Length: 547
Ligand SMILES: Cc1cc2nc3c(=O)[nH]c(=O)nc-3n(C[C@H](O)[C@H](O)[C@H](O)COP(=O)(O)OP(=O)(O)OC[C@H]3O[C@@H](n4cnc5c(N)ncnc54)[C@H](O)[C@@H]3O)c2cc1C
Image 1 (tube, rainbow, N blue to C red):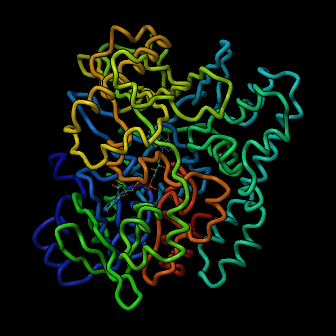
Image 2 (image 1 turned 90 degrees about the horizontal axis):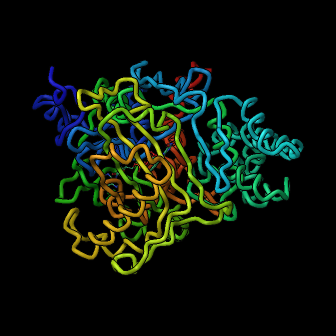
Image 3 (image 1 turned 180 degrees about the horizontal axis):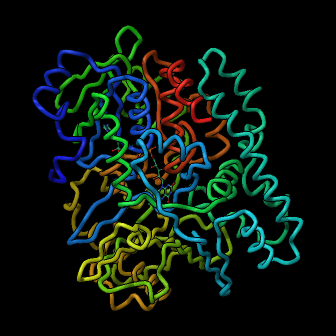
């Protein structure tokens, strides 16, 4: 069978003429809007619960931020560098294995998953065990043992409170305020404090404060704005290290969507949902751009709650107070990514499966690269970025075939202001005009140079370079304001009563990272919460078996 024939998606409502006819005969139980990790998880779980699901994805590749793209023999992921809690020791890992019947495999990044390189040459490795993590912090800050222990204890307290928090998110809306207060109370307290408040209450050592918060890039919100709970969740998420999907991050969509197809469901790509259809106060299906209507028993929007409230609800619903509250929340930062293709083995240059964070600052409030419109002017010097996050996907994937040319890949990510790019949002991909191209080229050159100064051995091996900007992210994945992680995980976000799987509209559920927490596994948990809210009896039975 050819690779193309194996794909459990296409541009139609089914695999073949017979299944398309069957789909027309029998309404779908659920339509899921968006095939990111959240949407795919909901769809796979509902399929496992015996429901027939149609997933609709606007892009020509499914997967949302787990999708991959290829150029001239190289292939890159767009939003998966390090994922924790995927082993059988974690509930999310066991669940993901069950949803894919064990087909989705993960490879550990190594004993160290993140290397931090600080301005004065200090390097601190984040390892795959809590004991080693404490030891590494203590080695770098020998006088700060009490602060390190207090910090790790606070992280553990939040982690413990999370199960109840998730449970509270699934209850019917009528009892949600009570559940939020009594079930999620412990976690709720931490969601309301900022990372900065908690960290500053633990230590006055500015460098240790920076090291505690150094992974803020994994949730896109600096310490003064982020909720401490999200910081703690990231630490807990990676306490046993990080993994990468075997076969590349495209395997995630392939395996989850195979589960959907095996239960009589399907995934349709290039299916751009224009509006969710609401009749008599109930969501009954969707209308695609072009006018086609698809009906279903219920609708799950996994396109982001904010995006749904602003773009997909009928106009009269968009104006409701709850929708305005959701849309007023600030999205997390936008980013640029340098996609690099190398020829020749790259391991001897220092590249490895571990991600490298290069910080040019100890100030974790330096949130975005200070670039502006002047950077398009060749006489203006583009400043260096304050932080580079570097990943080498080909070294993470045991199935990567370097071939005779010994092809390898690299990615360099840093945050940028969305406002600099948003003017080009409506321009056509690859035809955004000279000013955009010049700006992009200059940022690309500057970032590449900065990266090569850090890993000079790679200079001769770079054969391909391409920069994505926030409007590329908008074009392919459509988050609000090109955001890397959706709504910023601030205390305000967690206070909002509508970021939960049951919407205020009958028959409409929300899925994805904005329902739960950021990242691949956060989105997956959002997907589980959506399926559980839609089918509580079947879902609780299914989940009970996991322990
Ligand atoms: C550069 C980068 C690096 C990252 N690194 C990591 C990492 O190392 N580890 C980690 O855990 N997380 C990482 N993340 C974050 C993680 O990938 C995301 O948080 C997660 O995948 C989001 O999943 P989601 O389902 O919530 O949303 P998305 O993946 O954004 O899915 C939403 C989907 O809805 C579709 N859609 C939107 N509107 C419509 C419409 N009208 N009609 C049809 N379809 C529509 C979109 O095209 C998209 O496919 C990274 C993200 C980025 C961008």
